[in-house]
Amino acid sequence: MDASGSGAEGPGGQTASRLQAPGRRLGEKTIEVMLALCGVLSVLTTTAIVISLVGPTIGFFQLVPIGDFLFGTEWTPQFEPPSFGVLEIVVGTLNVTLWAMVFAIPIGLGAAIYLSEYAAPRVRKTVKPILEILAGIPTVAIGIFAVSFLLPEVIQRFWPGDFLGGAVGKPFMALAAGLGVGLMIVPIIASISEDAMSAVPRGLREGAYAMGATRMEVATRVVFPAALSGIVASVVLAISRAVGETMIVVLAAGSNPNLTFNPVESIQAMTAYIATTATGDISTGSVDYKSVFAVGTVLFVMTLAMNMLSIRLVRRYREVYE
Amino acid sequence: MTGAGEVQSERTRLAVAGARATVAVALRNQPRRDVILHALFAGLLLLAILLALAGLAALLIQALVRGAPALGPDLFTNVPSTINPEQAGFRPAIIGSLELIAGVILFVVPIGVGAAIYLEEYADKTRWWNRVIEVNIQNLAAVPSIIYGILGLAFIVRGPLDLGFILAAGSLTLALLVLPVVIIAGREAIRAVPDSIRQGSLALGATRWQTIRHQVLPAAIPGVATGVILAVSRALGEAAPLLLVGAVVFITFDPTPFSADGYSALPVQIFQYATRPQEAFQELAFAGVIVMLVVLLAMNSFAIWLRNRYERRW
Image 1 (cartoon, rainbow over the protein chains, first blue to last red):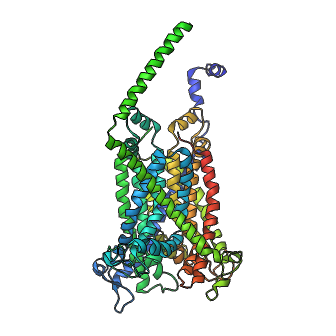
Image 2: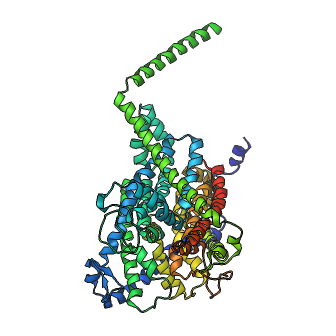
Image 3: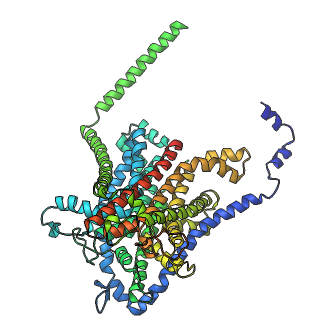
């Protein structure tokens, strides 16, 4: 009552002028500029990455023809003469990624839908943090787990006999790394997708229920499409993490370049090559040193291409609420 | 009054009973195929989550079983050794990791949250530079960690910044690595705060920053905290970039941030032990995993409690 009285004190013009700030609010402007600088830093990071990669990569191509690098299928830098056919280790990376995604996409999305649409609030509040613990488990630990548990106790025990060459007696294989990487990215898919699904307004669900939709229909035809941008984002983030994962691959997949998608073969991934080559006292000018940057460029371009694709997908399917 | 009320309630009772019966009939008429399909769907979802949890449980149990023989206070006080694993420990690696993480938090929380606020609250999405920043951050999130190692090696350790192989260089590398995680999670959290909250605050005369500071940020804290948790646990466990920016393994002194004598980190140390075939070193690696997981768990528990305490669905 009192508030409405004070509003009637002056004529309309005076009320309007009271809505204007008395000064130019320098503080507000400063804050905006500082926040913008935080955003700009990310662009500088990308620029720095590109600069870091490009220089030595050009140097590398002066020593090794670019055609031999991109289309060669022999990766033998330690031989004399060395061969730098990157396809062999690119396929190694894709081999691990393929099996990781076969494992992680259904499990991650299933877990997300369950937590968001089926689980009681109490279950959700318990299980989600546990999945986040899984997300926080260092990849070194998962790599050790993959090579000393998943490989002997799961894969070699249940692999059907001589199928694809058999799994027995192999100390490293792509599938062990694939399962390990899969375990690593399940919580990424589950957690981010669940967040996206939880953010879908209740009204959409209730509208669907009111029209007689079942829980499964609400989950798959209302919530899933509405949260698609977050779900696609989570899967792409997961793929790029799988492609870029180093420690699990180093520990469980071996270091034997191998042009195959066979899950029970030992392979070498791009990241494993970088991690095992760029350590220690590698001399700055050597071909090996520069090859690390060339492989890094391939890795960077691959993830960049995937990402641009995903950003486009997200834009196209994004639905905006409120 | 009472008579009319009784008639009314009788009518209501009949109506409710009728509606209930209709619904029951409709539900009973649901095709059997649908009922089975739906049960199967729910079962598969449950199976998915149980598989993920089983993987986690197996990992933890294996680490506990295999690492138990090497667990003890010596692990924290002893320095690494290549020759006698019985007396080797993790002291320099643990101290190194704690310092690395402190640096990451100092760098990533203000800058990550700042960038998230800018992009969600201030940035005019029609301007090309804001779109560049946005796409760029999405890309950075997917850049493999080993590439950040290359960046650290070529740009921070050598090149323009030329810090040398010091702990601070490792810290900066890790911070850049996890920055997009914080920004993206922060943006999601800020975006989830309904516009009506902002409009309400602005209508009451608050400035833009006051609205963000007192309305948007408090409401977004649970989401931001989730992002910071994920970021920090990733930085703590990340070994790959550190391999490239000079984390050496067998040092016998406590590392300091700016010393050129070298530094070590827990995951790198564990990796080194794990690649040695002797059982005693394997045990040490698993014991190191246990230590790392306990530290992570302690950190995460607090933050998760924080989030659950304040989480809300609009």
